[in-house]
Image (cartoon, rainbow, N blue to C red; front, side, top):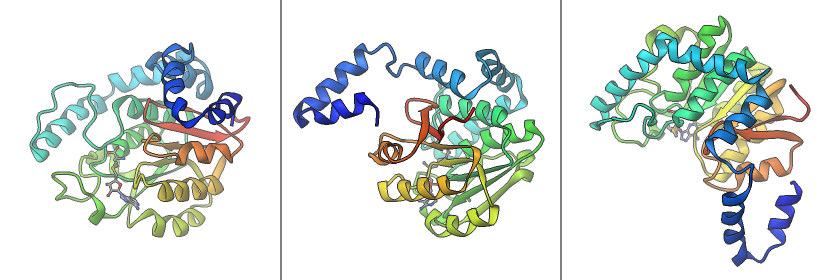
Length: 259
Ligand SMILES: C[S@@+](CC[C@H](N)C(=O)[O-])C[C@H]1O[C@@H](n2cnc3c(N)ncnc32)[C@H](O)[C@@H]1O
């Protein structure tokens, strides 16, 4: 934990929310979209131009057209009208995190990617689009079909993922608690792990601990919805890692000192 965290914990409980609000409003490094982007590009990319080139490549790729198809299919299936192009598909990784995840996969060039929580397949599709552009790498996704609980779930997890991207994808049907202890040793090591499944603290900590154990030297652990509970900050407190954000909701950590 850094000095800021120690000071925060020394404050009386009733003052903590007020001090947090004041800090978030006044700090020059507060979590604005611009600050998140700057910190991400300087931490995980060779330089800002490289980071921006991956985002530009995504915007110009056929995948961007497919996003419109995804939204239309989603609206038709779930019975909503997704009007704002930047709005995320409900229940999925937000668009900022999804786009940044694409750029990270392009830069990291992972061989083995594991994600938990597929749902309609929003994050899955972005990871697969980047792997396809890389020309190598495989995504293993874990989701128990029966646990999908959002409206319109009548099809298998990942039904929005384009057919053309499915060659580099294996869906493991089951809860992460059952699947990961067998899958990760089988894979040997993981270059990128994304948690987006059951956001209870025990499940998040279970996945983080296990993923960290099997993370490759240059590996990266990403978690969506890090504000749901204390699991992500608690995990960071006990690990020697460099952490940052893909968006306001999604965080990442990797073993310290990697570049
Ligand atoms: C937030 S959604 C995933 C969103 C997805 N990553 C996206 O961007 O579209 C959560 C998913 O986690 C799955 N899930 C719930 N409990 C799980 C568990 N224990 N292990 C793996 N997946 C789980 C649910 O079935 C659901 O599909």
